[in-house]
Amino acid sequence: MNFSSKAVPLPEPSCLKISHADPNIYSAITHRLLFHFSRTNADTPIIIVCVGTDRSTGDSLGPLVGTALARFHSPLFHLYGTLDEPVHAVNLEETLTLIHEKHNNPFIIGIDACLGHSASVGCIQVVDGPLRPGAGVNKQLPPVGDIHLTGIVNVGGFMEYFVLQNTRLSLVMRLSDIIASSLYSALKQWNLHASSAATRER
Image (tube, rainbow, N blue to C red; front, side, top):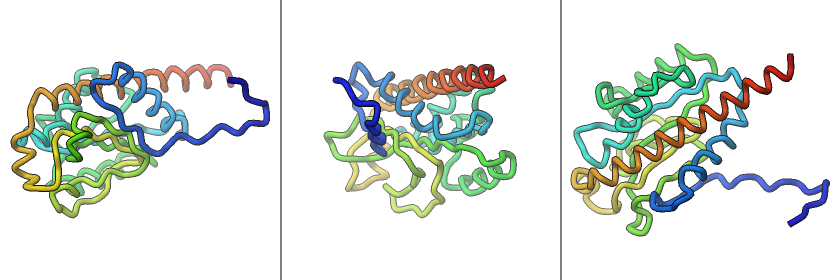
């Protein structure tokens, strides 16, 4: 399809929601993340906050993503929340305070598990705006992130704590692998783009 030179590109929708079984899931998530990164400056510190706890299978998505990202030992981002050092309800506010003390005007990416409709279980969402951790289990916690990624690990609406405890680890592991791989790929591509642009400007 051809477009005239005067055509105005449509804005990206604020939310991507895609099944983990979709063969294009890695490229779709990476593309969406690059769109969000394009609104930042090249020197903006990227902070990843992985929320959750390893004491609940369903709620372990965030720490699993953090642990996977930590293995890259990458200077491209600053990471908070792993299986060894989780970020959860008890220390979330303290962690966010620390982040803003250490980093000047950071771009924060929140990552967490969530519950949803049965047809959405196994989907990953990339959403513009902050994460609202604890909302599914009626906890009042501070919002996290300029954007956030969530994996829908089980069905919500009834006995949420019990549902999170009885979520299949295989699904949580699959979602965490996709999120970590796609996020790291997007960060590498964004860094390469930013470095090339800086070189051209010299």
